[in-house]
Structure formats: structure tokens, C-alpha cells
Image 1 (tube, rainbow, N blue to C red):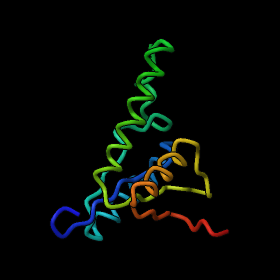
Image 2 (cartoon, rainbow, N blue to C red):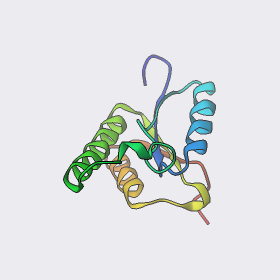
Image 3 (cartoon, rainbow, N blue to C red):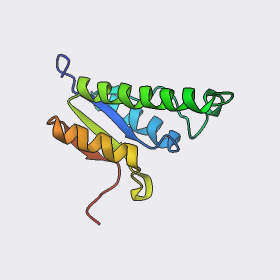
Amino acid sequence: MTGKYPVITLCGSTRFKDEFMEAQKRLTLEGNIVISVGLFGHSGDQEVWENMDEGTLTKTKEMLDDMHKRKIDMADGIFVINVGGYIGDSTRSEIAYAIEHGKEVRYLEDISK
């Protein structure tokens, strides 16, 4: 918490850019400080990956994954963008990391189904 504002990190597949933007707006208006992804590699920022050799691509993805875990460290909790129930491997690892570090985990869509 920063002052009176809870800090929430958004997690989920970057293919859901529109849902990320909607959640960011809604959570901000609810009085949260929202930390999001730095780019949408699966929906709109493909140029980031163009002309990268395999080694650079791998290192960049590892860096981005690590940076996102640091964003989780700064937050009180995470909000998972799980459109249609989809949760990929990277997001599963972020959820596990958040739980392991005592962070609250909330979801866009109900996961009890």
C-alpha cells in the first residue's frame, strides 16, 4: 500500500490488451495504484520481436518475466486477466509467485467453474 492506495499488478496473457486497459481504468477509478505490463507482445507490439536473433529473444523474454515478478514484489496483490478462463504458463508462474509471497490474488473471471 502506498499511502491509502493499494497497489495492484496486472497479470495475464498480453493477447488480451483491451481487457488489460479496461481493468487498469476500472481499478484506478476504484482507488488503486495499478502496475501493468510494459508492452503487449501478443497484441500490438510485435515489432519488438522483429529482427531479434533467438538468443536475444530468449534473454529479452527472461528479462521481461523477471521484471514482472519485481512488479509483483512492489504490489499488495495481483489482478489476473483470465479471459475465457485462459491462464498460460507464465501467468500460472506469476500467480504461484504472488501466493508464495503472501499477495492477494484476484481474477477478472470466476475461476471456481
